[in-house]
Image (tube, rainbow, N blue to C red; front, side):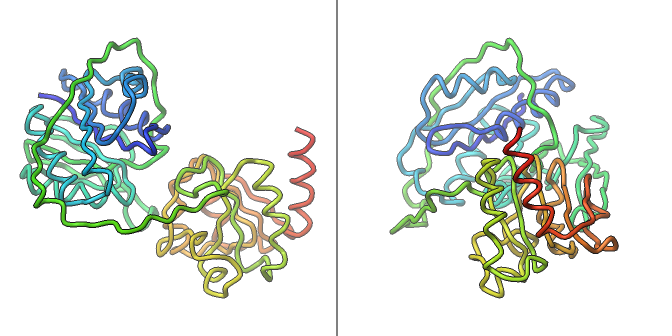
Length: 320
């Protein structure tokens, strides 16, 4: 038996979120007195795989198969399910991101497991197994009891701090024996945005709303983002108006993000927008309307004109 964590890599490297997942899984495994297995699919160097051991993984299963270079949910979910069966996994954990949300239901069906998506904390009980998750676009929480023997969870970013250990890890090659017929997706072309901090990876995100009044006023936000090494985002009305590209739109109908800091300038805070950014560790709101709904969700707030606040923030950052 074990706890199995699916760890994504980006061009052969793991990011902080992968270490959060392993640490979270290790905490569950400790309570269940079972080992932790991390599953890595793709070409990753041994030194990089060993990093997973620093956060609690006892074993890393490495699937180095070029067919998985193209993301295919059908094939990936089958590979994860086979790894779970091989390890006798009682709990399987995914990231609560686009890929994790696509794979988790498929794996749950293959394992006849209970599924809880959007988990935000360690289980409050193990017999029965009870976990807390976000509901109503992050406006409330629910405690969900899972009665199935096997559990599949998707876990929100920034919900558990990675914890380093002195754990020794073994790395094993794993062949899930997935046939060519399971690879139903053909990728003909891949276009990647370069020269920008990807919103889904950014530790800090600077975002502007309709209160910025027009595309010509984004220079200050761009400068602040450059100084902080931050990603640049916007609300849906801004992208709909064509002020900024749709790839910068964050919210329930755009990108779902979870940075350490989300700074919202001139954004009122509609529930659809907050649904996409509510997992941020800290939210700072700058709005001249003291009644703006975003202040209810913000950890820090400045009631003021963004066009006066932004230059002062830029100067403050430069001084630091």
